[in-house]
Image 1: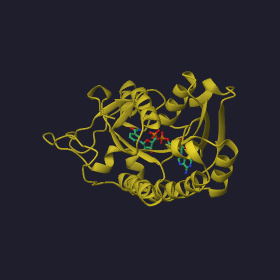
Image 2 (image 1 turned 135 degrees about the vertical axis):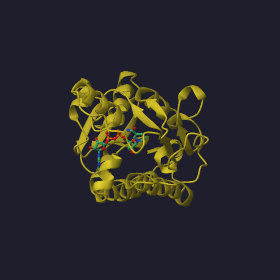
Image 3 (image 1 turned 30 degrees about the vertical axis):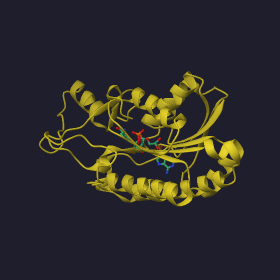
Image 4 (image 1 turned 180 degrees about the vertical axis):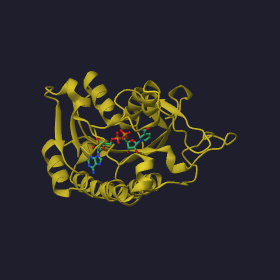
Length: 258
Ligand SMILES: NC(=O)c1ccc[n+]([C@@H]2O[C@H](COP(=O)([O-])OP(=O)(O)OC[C@H]3O[C@@H](n4cnc5c(N)ncnc54)[C@H](O)[C@@H]3O)[C@@H](O)[C@H]2O)c1
């Protein structure tokens, strides 16, 4: 069985990914998560006593800790979900977004490059670094605009999306400069179980059930694609096993994209 180092696995998408991997018996999982306000250990309660699930509390920017984990568990892939992920919070206070999304990803990349550089033969060839990003790096769409594509120009509009764009560029540069087998996925909004209630769909449901106002962003005319989190997690497993590296835009699986 393969071993994956998953970062940010106690959050919304990461926990769904880990539960799915363990349910299907696909990989042993090491979850490195700082447990910020967005990380919830209860998300992974169903596998608390699973011997092939290991939790480590810590920061992706902690080089020594990341180095120790990589040396100890020798993963075949690193999947980076760890991020500050809420646009409104990034507007109120961008610094944490720069620290984790930009600097944290940089430190993680440095340690992964070091570890990968020490691998040999097929272990080196088959290794993958999968960076989970967002389609918000492409900006916003008007009602008549064509959908984003992998080669759409980056146009981030918030500190959140700018910090994710910066991390995407670093990942790309580590592939081109050092040959690190890296992949980036740029997914649209997710919905589904275990989402923190500050995000649109759970917030609307909670407010509606309490008879509170439903806050609409701007004039309410912005267009977004929505992807069910389980579909996203299944799609994320594909580039891990597929040959080649690059960038994948994940919209709706039925279109065959992603
Ligand atoms: N939720 C969406 O709709 C969506 C859509 C597209 C892309 N994404 C991207 O997917 C990834 C995961 O999103 P999510 O919605 O699950 O986020 P989330 O906010 O629910 O979870 C983030 C997790 O990262 C952890 N974390 C934060 N800083 C850390 C650090 N420095 N070191 C280690 N762990 C840290 C948190 O504790 C939390 O468990 C993010 O990179 C996000 O940009 C999310």
